[in-house]
Image (cartoon, rainbow, N blue to C red; front, top):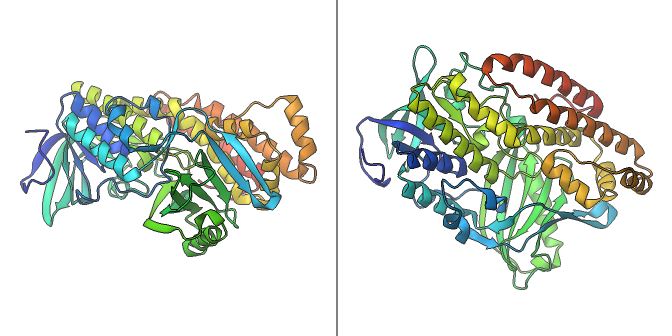
Length: 467
């Protein structure tokens, strides 16, 4: 079978592939490219049309592209980078009439997400992947023993069967594939609920005059603690504006917060809106396990998103590459069992999974904390240490800085103490993830200890259990 055939074919017969990837997002394209580069037959099933594929709601901020996997060469996606001059964040705190400058480590760019998505797809095709657009998965095929062996789909109104050694779930947040699979024979994480996710809404806005902050990512809390606004400059005059909020909140009320803020910012007077789009993203810890016999989840479908910033492209790229590499080994060894695929989980947790789990502890704190107290306290903290905490999951603060923060935060010492205790909890979680098990048999004991640590988080923060 040709692996370079385009998506516009009219085939309706059943087909057999080495790997079927569901979803042509970042994780799906990197997984497919990795597998195709190794010489295997791989097809991506994409529900959107060819014209719309790659059009995804996103903040457009891309961090760490200099270290992306090489399954899709960086020069392939680099033309989608529209602003490479951004180097820090601006956290606006209206309650304190303060703007906190926060350095952001590593390479940073604001991109045209639609162009980036199309270039990822081109990269996957050039690697030898086949892509079927207008294809909606309707069921997952499993053997009696539970192994996933393919999917059923509708392509342009015709029923299709896709048999495969492995199915890769790159179908995004709250993936429907995971509702179709019987995971009772594995440790695949099913402790997932809509309340652990956020909705996002963004507009692409054009202004007449260059904004003064074209070198920064601008963040601002909403009037409720459930979300934040963002202003990310694609160029000096083209801005991605949006907000993210917990799914438990009413979306229209929070969208009004964004529109009100836009009306009150003089730089947006007379602005023109080009594009409006919404979507969902996980603001949770990564799946405890994202593998099942013949099945691997990647990217948003496995919770591979920084839960404090919503950044997910880098994690998705690496998840796709790690999954692809493990799948190639599994096919070569004729072993697609949970135990053989487990190495993928280990690599994700070692790279960023533990860090994201630690960052999620601060999300839990926010759900129970007083917003005014918390933002006032943040305004008193050093920007570089906030940056370290946001991206590493922890931060080392000298006694000198501790004393300075203590002085600046007088009146909020109860909140400061709670934040300090929360940091200790996050450090404990991070350390525990460094001991992530090397086999599925060891996972239940590891989870039991992790859940004890989470009990301490809820006791410290006063938050309702998230998991």
